[in-house]
Image (cartoon, one colour):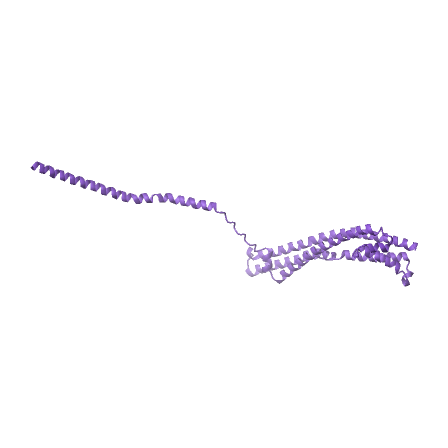
Length: 289
């Protein structure tokens, strides 16, 4: 009994010790797991950060690149107009008026010369095939210079009386036709003097603006006491723009003037030839009558 009692006591002691050991082992495992769990949960964070960065990089790459807005030129023509004084604005207005007038005259004279060319073809078809000079003049357009010259020749033959009768008929008809041809020539030359004037003086108008801009640059240097680029860039840019505008107005005006003069010469040669033929026809008609 005593042995059994000792055995039971020993078993209980070992059982208790084993239980305490198992309990201690179980508690240690739980503590280790509890300590390991945050570490295991925090560990993926560094891996997630590169993923987030990669995602942002992909998003930025996929998004269209924004174009930088073009900066407004502080030394352009618009800035020149807004920052210039009354003298510079007056120069710009004068150059603008000259340019618009030149292009207007060029367009008008081109249309006029084209119209006169059509009248020349009309005269060749209708006038010379008529029975008389009066009938031929009546067949032409009222706006035609050929009709005006033919009518002047007819009137010369009808009004050769009184004091005019002392002038030989040949000279009288020639004078009348020549006057009408000269009048047509004056009308064809109208406006070309404006082109010649613009071509001559517009460079000097631009040069005046250049001098005015340089004066502003020197004034800015004198006030600031230093020749820094920000003090002289605006006035010098204004001066260069004025020079360029003066040339831009002058060159088209000179080219238009020379071209229109050349075309007018051809038109007037045809009109003078028509006047000479008309003179001969009128003398022949007068001698027959």
